Length: 288
Image (tube, rainbow, N blue to C red; front, side):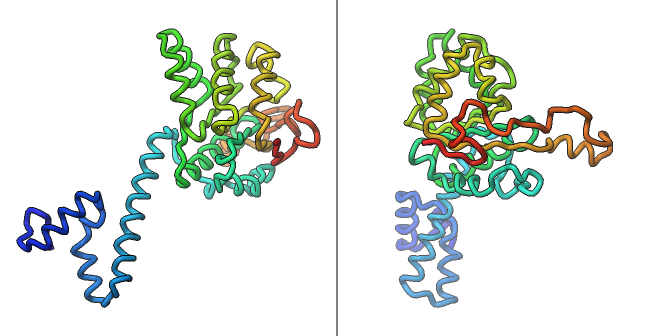
């Protein structure tokens, strides 16, 4: 069976027109091969219906996921399956697998990942984000620096409300690398406005290399930092990842670094984020 323009059978033409109106794109493209396979294998009517509907669902799901990945603006491809838990045993694999189900999205819960640079926080954040997209939720990825730059620009142009709405819409907003650079006071207030808008409405996933006790320095205001943390930690899951940097490991393998640098703090992290109650802190703690 050819394309619509090549059809001579009125019945075939009606079928193709109907498939087009119903936007069953995949079936229109594969109908000839499906009919041939059905005849060869002598499918029942129900088997035929199951096959064509299943293929159409799979095709639409694939397109939806592809579009979701584009909207998310992930900087690279990282997956949970590709994370080396044996290299970073401090990463709570059980909790990460649980978060991969996306159940935390339904409750508007947050995820905070603490740890030094290079231990895989961004990898896990992107991997979890991809899982959430696959489950049908909207996701947006940004670095803290880019986020504050966009909010600051929108404020100066009189479009802050619209930009805040843009960052509030996704079911999951991933903010990577919080604390690598200190915020100016106005930027810290903009960050608070965003966190406050999303509070108990949409989930945030934040990666940071700073202890909770140092957030006052990051935001330049202890009171503001406390208000931000109060909202982030209220309904949250926290992960503490310690250990060696992946990048340093690769350099060591290549011979660029002979051994661990003496007195280096790059592969150290606080045993727990200071400021979280002891009963709620620790690897994989869940605050409710």
